[in-house]
Amino acid sequence: MTIVLSVKKSTKTGGVRLGVLTVTALVATLTVPVSAAQAATQAATVKGAVFYTFSDTVEVYRYRPGQGLKKTKVDEMGQFSASPDGNKVAYIDPDGKVHVVPISGGKDKVIASGAAAGGPCGTPVWSSDSRRVAYLSPGDAITIVNADGTGKKNAGRSLGVCHLAWSGNGRYLAGYAGNTEGVYLLDLKTRKSRKLPGIKLANHVQSLSPDGRKVIVRTIKPSDPGGDGGWPSWYRPTIVNTATGAKVAIPVSGTLIGAIYLRDGRLAVRVKGTSHNTIVVLSKKLKRVQSFSEPRTARAYGLLQVL
Image 1: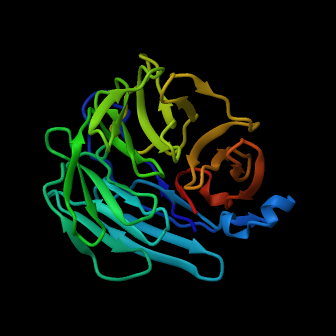
Image 2: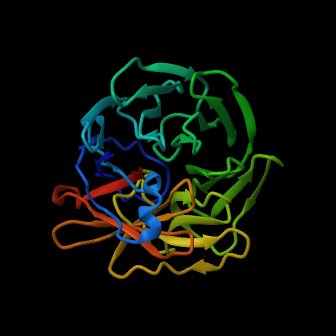
């Protein structure tokens, strides 16, 4: 599956400004893994990707082999995310209402209200099973609701409210502070939040490992612009151990421009190419198990999901 967005955003440092989006879908050519171990687990084979771009509207496209492109439109604000299964989009409208809309076509449903609205940094996030949505409420509060609108509850407070990422085991939420000064991890079991070691400044959190022990971020220097809170089209990913602050080396050559943890613990790494980019999939032990080439036209777009 593929969803694509191309980003036009302000590089102004400071407060969050509204970003606008347009999404273009692209077809990824999958390379069948050759190892015996991977061949024995066909269910684990990556079957698509989601790309994104910001413009004056938001259009989300899904690609899966044999199904063609599936498209939906969402609100023009930058507060949106695609579910890990690639079937739905959650977004927040200017009135703070949380919507869920099927990518393949269907009714747009309001599942909650009272979300913080007005800035693209406050994006909602899906649980790994695509059944729940977490989002920012006023006062740095995090709220969780089922995708059908039931079970709404307050999950705690955290200074890490921007670009939320949810661990595969469902226990942790990570996000960067709105002033870019660090990344925070909220433990949904204890309802306590802590600032992660090893990250002084960051303006993007992409993903958490399933156990919450590693986080993928875009770190910045004091001299770098903070941005307007929109998702970056591409960036050099940094993986940090959430307990020690130690950096985790990514054993993939080339210019890395993104990375995402999959639900089962594999790591998908995006590599810049001359004519097209490539996504390399690593096992939990960081061994290469699969790769596929993105379409040429996707080179300038950001990566949102790997499916």
